[in-house]
Image 1: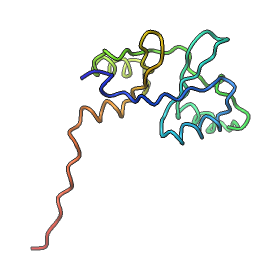
Image 2 (image 1 turned 180 degrees about the vertical axis):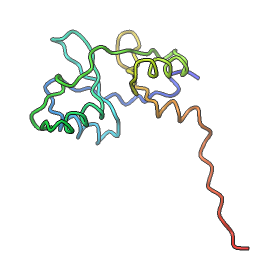
Image 3 (image 1 turned 120 degrees about the vertical axis):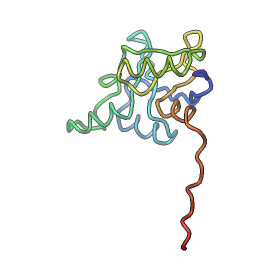
Image 4 (image 1 turned 90 degrees about the horizontal axis):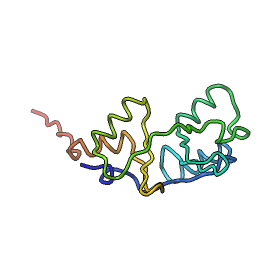
Length: 134
């Protein structure tokens, strides 16, 4: 199975000046755990994840005054739609992260998460057996 089979095509893109509260609200509304941060001045794409926001709040920083650029990972590993899920999982394990931006011709076309991969590798949920009285 390939990354294109597992990735979410909902790609939330924000700017570096978004506050963490704005980023969290957009991520929540779209039900995604990461946003692509497009910073033309820095020359590329970065990623802001729910963990980045949590770490900032945990440090006592204000989500109303902290901006995405200060918490964005810019040393990003990108996947392509034709990577295998094994390659994606290996990159995540090696790098210690849970999301990969998927690029096709240098454009973000999706994000794949550990959860997406697990969903593909795990058989469909079966209903739990119902206990009967004897």
